[in-house]
Image 1 (cartoon, helix red, strand yellow):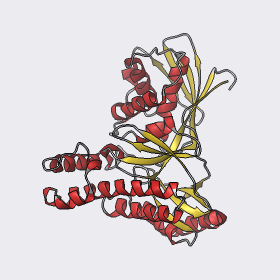
Image 2 (cartoon, one colour):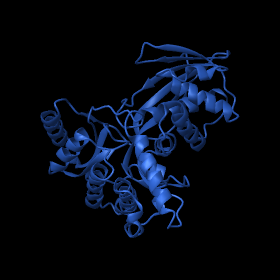
Image 3 (cartoon, one colour):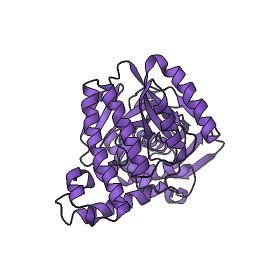
Length: 371
C-alpha cells in the first residue's frame, strides 16, 4: 500500500458484560479487538472522496459538497455520514482516495460498523493535518450511526473502537463518558469468541423497540423516583414501583437494573482475578438477556448453553446487540481447542450450520501509521 500516505485502523469490540444498558446510562465493560478495519488514505487535491474496498467490487466517488446524495448507498452511506458530520463539526474535509479493508466480520455483533465509522473519521482527521481526538471521533461516529444507518445505538461501540487500550477492558460510564481502564487478568482462562453465523441487522431487528421500551420505563418510574436515566434505578426501587410498568416494560427494566449491578460485581471480580465469579456473572447476564430482554433467539441460546455445558467453560453469554452475532466465553486455556471442537460440533447438530471461532487479542483503538 505504498501509494497511500497513511494507514488508519480502528478496532472491532467485544463487550465482556453490560449489555443493552449503554443507552440507559449504565456502565459497560468492552474491549477493543485485534479484528480491525483499516483505511489506507491519500489526499487527492480535489473535491471528491473516492472509495474502494479490498473485499468488494464497488467503487464510489462522492462529491464532498453533495454528500447527502449517498445516504442510501449500502456501503458508502457510512463514509458520507462521517464526512458530512466531520465537516459540520467545523473540521476541514479534504478530497481523498480511501481503500477500506474490514476484518471485523459483518453481522457478527463485534461492531464492524463502528470500526468503519471510527477509522473513516480518523482518516479524515489525519488528511486534514489533525491528530485524531478519539472521544470526539467516537461521538461523531455514534451520530453517523443514528442519522445515516438508522440505529439508535448507545456510545459503547464507537467509544471502544476509538479509545481501546491493549490488554485492558474499559469500564465506561455511558452517561458521563468517564472511563477507567481495567487490566484483563484472566489467569488460567482464555476469552473465546464464537460467531453463531446468524447475521444480525439491528435496523430490521427489535433493537430500536427495546430502546423505546426502556425509555418508557424511565418516563413512568421518574414520576416517583428522582432519576435521570434507568441505570440510576436500584433493584429495590424497581420492585417497589413495578406496578407503574406494563409487564413487558417491567421485564426490560429489570434486566437493565440487574445488569448494571452485574457490571459492578464483574469489575470487582476482574480486579480480584476471581474468574469463577466473573464466569457466573456471564451466565446470569445471558439468562437475563434471553428471558427478560428477549434479544437472543434460538441460535445464541444454543451457542451459550452448549458452551456452558463444557467442563472447561466457567461462563458464556451473547455479546453485542443480539438477534444473532457472537458469544463470549471464559474457558480454561489448556482446554480451548477441545472446547471449540465441542461447541462447533454440537451447534451444527442443533442448528444445522457451522459456528465460527475467532482468535483475537485485546487491542488499541485508533492507530495511525505513515505508509
